[in-house]
Amino acid sequence: MENISLQSSPTTPYFPEVNFNADQGICDLKGESYMEETYKFYLPLINWLKDYTKNIKRKLEVNIKLIYLNTSSTKCVLDILELLKDYEDQGGEVKVNWYYDKSDPDMIDEVEDFEAESGMKIELKEFEQ
Amino acid sequence: MIDTNIVSLMKSKTLLSYRGPFYIELISVFGMNIRNFNDIYINARKKLFKIFIELSQNVSNYSEDFHMVNNVQRIGIGELYLTELGESYSFTTKNQVKVTDANILAERCELVNASDQGKLRELKREQRINSPGEKFGARIGLIQAVMLSRNKLDYKVEEIDEDFSYFSLTVTIDKY
Image (cartoon, rainbow over all chains, first blue to last red; front, side, top):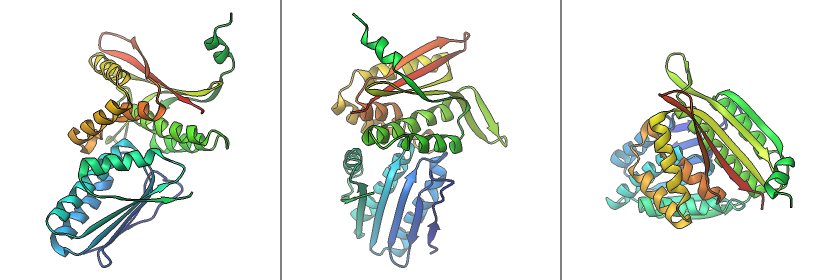
């Protein structure tokens, strides 16, 4: 299974940096997310996770450090969290960490909503920008 | 006695005004400038940036006046105005909509304005879960704008002809 690695660029700050590593079972998503056609960007990530949870079936750690995501991106992130919750319900081992900027308390509410909507436990971790 | 609204308006400063297609590259540059206006009101600027992106992308995605890029991508055309007032920032977008959609949008604004924070959070969750996703997004931009600003939406519908209207939307973001 191939890894996904997308670097962020100052000229396209609306795309997040992505590192999905099947060998390590670690998925990192960081930066900002407010691109056009959000679903087209997230679909390969969702398909990668479907593939991993169906075929690799090992422990998975997901680290999200998005300092801003628009509401279209929140829908896609919710789809990812629902997929992870299904994996967990089927016996898969999943850990989700969400790193939020200490000076942006609105993100805490957002993460709480994600937890409530997906049923997936999310570990909130603070960082300073 | 002097009307406080008039005083506030006299002290207003235009920070940004634009009319044209809402390309993502442009939205991104404007957004970066908003974040870097000054070092004070950091919290307000964070909220302003988030609201700016949501409302600008609404114009980009849904304006009935649009450009086609390479016959594939539809980029909405509209206007935006960002003004600094004494105690707040005011952000307005304006774009063309179908007359029927203007009524739906007005109803949505009324619903959002009539809801408190708790009800808004409930509406947001409900709407996001029930959204068809894909190209439709989450359809919670207006709710998010009010939740962040904690101020009501100010909207105006101006008729163009029997099929189309201009829909303008203003959100006020307090500095403190």
